[in-house]
Image (cartoon, rainbow, N blue to C red):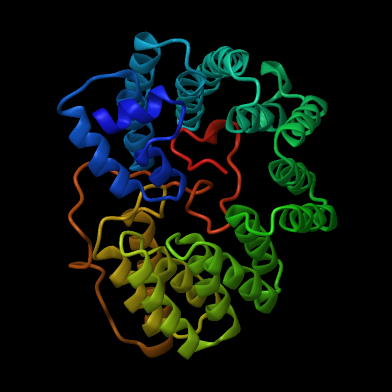
Length: 360
């Protein structure tokens, strides 16, 4: 508790928050849950809300975020977390409930930004809202562009990433790439910008360039998984099997809590119909451990494995079973497509604001 409290009082991020920012949800969970046995302070409730959401809990994140606000309503990120959780809830709600949740989102995010107008994550959340919400609840692409300009005044790299997001939604691929390259030029050691560019290149058929950008990101921070996931997918797409095998082994050693590179490589192998036995082996390896927060769920992996087995049967006529491959994980995990499920860290919809997203 003292470590969390001391960092909070001096305005610095706590160790748990730093771990979350780097995508190390399991390690952050161990710290925060240990602290929660001794303390019920606002910061602990806030962090528990983020962590529970990252691991697919759809019940507790909102009460935890609301408790953080009740304990200390003068902290912007606590209100932001309430907003983000309501955004996630809207994914699973009916139309009328979505309208109510949208109003709650706006109230909380506006409160957060009134407390800290330079909170980039809060600004990104509001931009997403304007960008993707229907007009009936305040969606407005012109206002989304205004928020992107505000982000740029706070953080130039994040400003370019916001512009890239606007271009992505508008289907302006050349402008999206240009903005991603501007982000990398402006912040050459910015991990997320570099990974976002690598993922863009991969998704648009330039696997070799994607590998090059991801390799730079790996040098920037070898303890994060996203760059390895992009490289694994690129190697699979390019048919570089020996390099792929070496890469997933290196990634597992560097980031043992997150086996997403296995999943991402298998996903590509399945899509291309190549190395299906390897794809099966990678998915079984992924399913042998609890997924990291905001990573593809076990149900996602099972579904992919079923597809691999079906494709294998159609080619060879053999039969295989999915059973006996999954880690035992307490509780349920929802699919987190659109959060860290994509190695690019691509963006959430109105209903997918980042209640459990590591900040950009």
